[in-house]
Image 1: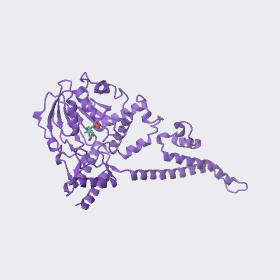
Image 2: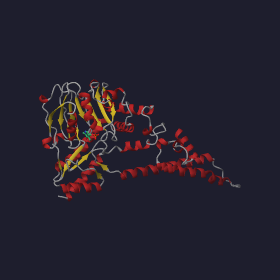
Image 3: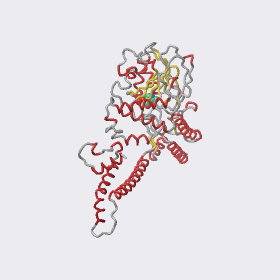
Image 4: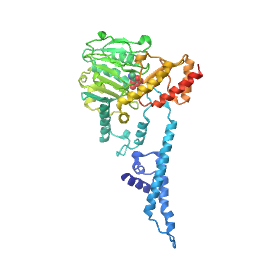
Length: 456
Ligand SMILES: Cc1ncc(COP(=O)(O)O)c(C=O)c1O
């Protein structure tokens, strides 16, 4: 009823270019440009109506006058419903026709429902009268957004109370330094497994702060697998044991976790967070940059066991101390507010899809579809050993570089974009994160079948 009143009030007031945004868009939480036009049109008709109606009151007319308000209400309802259906339909068709299947490794595809929700709330969030981007991070509204994101994630991942959830900045790469600076404070030693470029960068960075022991590496086979881990090689005195759970560039993932005993396990989950179920209690610290499965680039999520905080090296800058961020509830300084809000929407979306379990099932279905095709293809070939294949990033090659280039170009023109492999690896890579629908992978496989027939 209140929205009806607001709508009528707005129409009566009309739209002027003068005045504040609030005057122009009094229901601005749902403001969309096409609706602006609609309301203007509606306003003209609405104002013209009494004149049209007055004709039936001409002298001598025997017609029984229909009450003005009744006609207005009927007219208003029919006209609004018609425009709503028309606009919603066109809106839907427009977006769906223009969106491609984006196989980018990150920043990557985001759920359309979430983008649309964010779009609706872009100018005005709830009753706040402003965009989330314009909001103080100390405001009540933003605190609600932050707590909502945190609580929903805690529920989704079943994160126990003795773990803190932090929303930080600096991307995964800042974690390469933050982890040793905060966790290497006791024995100044850590174990690392070298499974690709991101693990190598983490190793390089950690070497600046202490003694790094590379327990195993798959570098000699171009990181096409997770190397076998021999527990007798693990250092019992290490301050932590570091792994990259999903290797974005090479398309490998851990299917079983190393048994590190009392040594805390630290995991980079940047490209697989929320894609499969995971027992958080097996980890001391987990982190992920947002730009693959969580939201727009700019937020880094860290989940850390409480007892691992408070041992930072003296040289650690305040902004790089986990305990400082935890104590201040991720509000020590201005956090990436819009990214956190967006993450909250993504968490809600995952919940609506049935949670991580449902997400994992869908991800397995998508990955199997592509792997099954690659396994039987006489032209395409997957590059990773079967047991370690990633659910998120699937690299593959054709027999020649020329064919790779032809495939990428043709795929692009068909609406399958960003399939080019990482510059250090070549070939192709399909990144099929949570937001990639099953239809996207089905369509890609169908196109690959056609390409194979045409190029054999
Ligand atoms: C597994 C992994 N770790 C770390 C990073 C680095 O993240 P950022 O670019 O946010 O520093 C990436 C980037 O793609 C990644 O895939």
